[in-house]
Length: 143
Image (cartoon, rainbow, N blue to C red; front, side):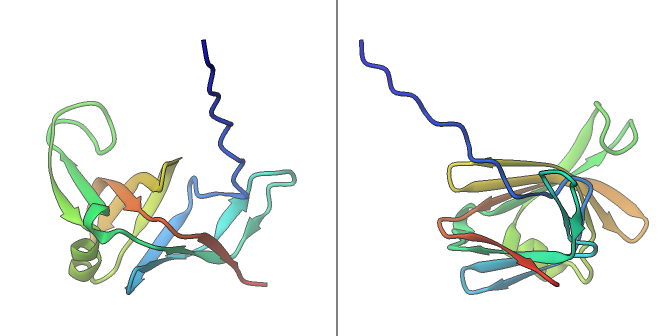
């Protein structure tokens, strides 16, 4: 019997958990995520650094945003919800001011998935961002 082992995913240099996105910009097939307070290193001493992220090689046909509005429980809990699925491009274009608090991030084959809470004024929705890409993910650190 032949065995094929998939190597472990390489450790990421930064975590986006509990970080706040204030803007998203698309230029061609490049997405830039603008952060309010940057993100945290994943190795001791776990410093928080100021910076943004550039994702190249977007496949906009497969970049989506799911917005979930809970109907019988507070946002983010188990329960009934209604929602909509938007293209990432339409979400960015329709939002005057983007406010996303990231709770979780997942990476797979050419895919970044960010889960968190999206604020629209006083309304809070749960958001799932699926970002499909084939290029580099670059952390733009401000010194």
